[in-house]
Length: 122
Image (cartoon, rainbow, N blue to C red; front, side, top):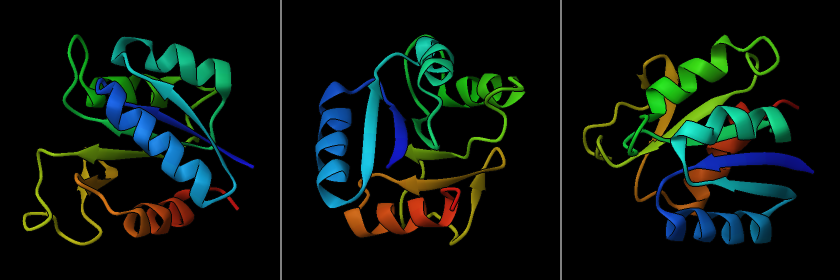
């Protein structure tokens, strides 16, 4: 079972993603609704992949991702941004934000599963 950490300040969004992903596949989803605690939670649960919102109060996803990537224990964990700041029309296929792959919200389950399969360690 693959562990996914989803970091987003919207609790309704993380709850929906957890339920949807756990029903759709062999995933255990851990929710974190505070970007400040993203690093701490990642260290505790050691996820296989992190889905991260960019726009959050206190600390944005870019800063949280940078802290995670600088940690030698967590550095190899793929991070995928989920964001509404880049629309599907603006997104370049295979594009990156700050060196990280991203999906534009709203994201379909098929898009999300395809992205997870691409970035999850096998």
